[in-house]
Image 1: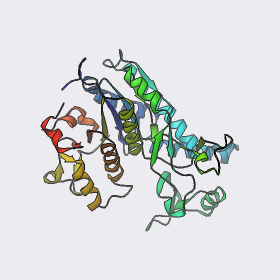
Image 2 (image 1 turned 30 degrees about the vertical axis):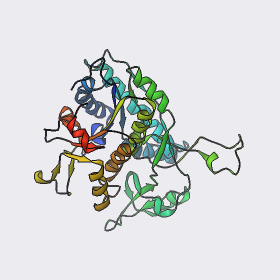
Image 3 (image 1 turned 90 degrees about the horizontal axis):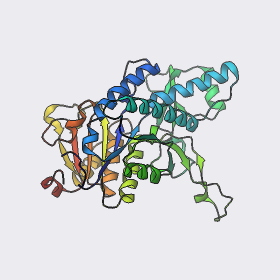
Image 4 (image 1 turned 180 degrees about the vertical axis):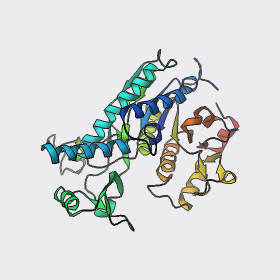
Length: 350
């Protein structure tokens, strides 16, 4: 059912997968990434018929790795001070937000719609982590040399050597769960006015409220400090969608997570007979509990959907960007529909 004036206001948070910006095997020229985003925006044009407005979030995995490498090269060759991880997240958020705005404004179906890109800060619970919490790979694989290890050690950078590939190392950082979006009220206000909003790029710029650990409530305690971590963009998207749902009383808010593959399968083999077209929250709880899902699998996406539905969301979707309109069709074989309650199946578009 298309959105029309007078119906219950429907909004969405739409999370773009990394393939929307840079695909496997492609080189990272800005023109290539903008071309990919042009195709992504063309697919997303169908959302104009479904929602009054929506927020677009996106990943930044390769891009933040490139920025870290540029920063290191600038320091090594020109003694330009290096940027921290949070600074690189901010840089990529601004750059990709600009690219997305450009492609949206140039698309014929979007030209009459207002659009904005918001620098978004996302809170994590803590800023001190144990060694075993450094699990998220960032940047590219580097040669395992004495010089590279010394550079990492000097700067206190954690890294891992993959089993069976001792000639390589790669930086690892914590990836704590987010709990609040600093600018969510601004995003919600823009969406209520019909503004398509790009936000939470790369999971958001990670920040930490140091005053929560202060011994007193002194006004001198710092409340807003950046953290050298990576936030999963699907988890941040779920928090944003939940915040917006609470803010927009009476509105219908959906979470849409887009990726390359078709949706959810019973196992990793992705056979047609194992495809799951729809799932209730109760079934999702069981699936997550009984399935091994680590950070390199579909696990964070399912946990994000689980969080959103538990927070009051009625529907969430997981499916391919290339078949975006079909993701919402319960009779298609593209995309998995998640329902908070099985009763919603009786009223699929109410």
